[in-house]
Image (cartoon, rainbow over the protein chains, first blue to last red):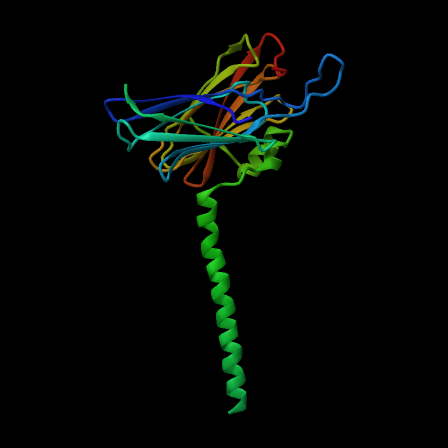
Length: 106
Length: 156
């Protein structure tokens, strides 16, 4: 299942872009058990990358202790209103998700 | 002259070999910069010290790192953490939770032009310290804060 993302990117008057992203993902640790006592297999996002064209804005490596439906916020400079940010992520099962957002004036 | 021609051939082969080695060495840091590999074994390490060691060892306490963690976590499955590093040339921000089975939660790689700031939400198993480990100018710095967990919550 290709996961969808909700992303917001706002640029301040000083030119700082504030990006907030929300992913829909169970982020299972692999340490929980279901009602019958069977272990629930680990299922979590391992890497998230945000790009502005060819420019890497941030790369994050995650473990299973990031919360369910994880959020990621970061800030950067050197972009213009209307520029597009491309997000992509992959989890420990190799499932991928992505999303894009255009920078808006804050 | 036979001996000198052998020497020349040996010399050329040595030169080619050295050239190839130089190329490989030169290409290595570029590839690392292009895409850092996830350090899987550091994510499965079970102690804070082991994680810090893997990240480069010897992290010095720094007040140039701002770490925001709620002093009391009512929802331990959703603990907001904000790290803001004022250390010049910050390239990496790692977040660790002392009492989690695997303390390392996240590593953020900060390229030039990106502000040394990261915000996410974590699961915290029980009352203990949350660490921000920052790499700046190739050196490690740290800041920690305690969060009290009122209800067990690593499950979520």
